[in-house]
Length: 208
Ligand SMILES: Cc1cc2nc3c(=O)[nH]c(=O)nc-3n(C[C@H](O)[C@H](O)[C@H](O)COP(=O)(O)O)c2cc1C
Image (cartoon, rainbow, N blue to C red; front, top):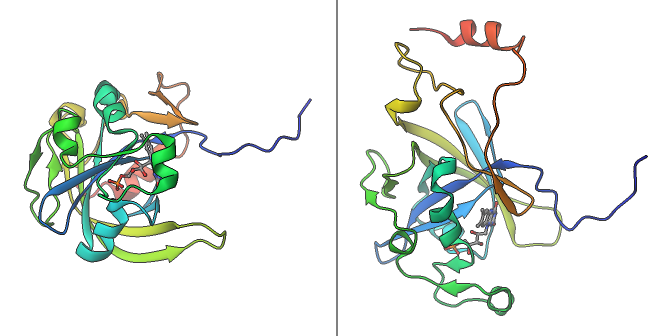
């Protein structure tokens, strides 16, 4: 029996991304988001155009997509309801948002320089993807949301989540992403079934 409902959000469960960008004065900003999807060497990010992150992406044209493991959930949660925008909008203030200048300090996370982009990497995140902005799309619905298309140009992976003996493979058995489903945090459970796609897909791209 299905019921017809009108949910406020459709966040059915996606990995959390900590996007680091550079502010105008050269200091780093860090923001959690989870409306991200991946294709080939690109990622599409759904983010409010009112965020400091999007302001920075438009100006600087680069970022690092840092993927926290489930173990970093308390750091991520410390960044909830914070913005790097000095002028907090009335809407955000009413929701409990506050301006935080040092988001890395707030989340007990540390930054290091990236190789190819100006934004820093988050040392504690097992996945660090340096990316450049290729396109910024608007949504048809009346909102400030932007779909930001970025291309990943350098990938850093903690060796603890790599497939042993295979340089370019991340082991999904070892990678425990932090997942936001609706507004709560989860991780992934165990593998439930072998995948028929896995074999041809991996052999097609296995050029090592
Ligand atoms: C777990 C989590 C996921 C979030 N996902 C998104 C998202 O996908 N898109 C978005 O615009 N904001 C998302 N937010 C809210 C942003 O973090 C928020 O707008 C924040 O103020 C952005 O920071 P900034 O203004 O410093 O860029 C999320 C927040 C949390 C805690």
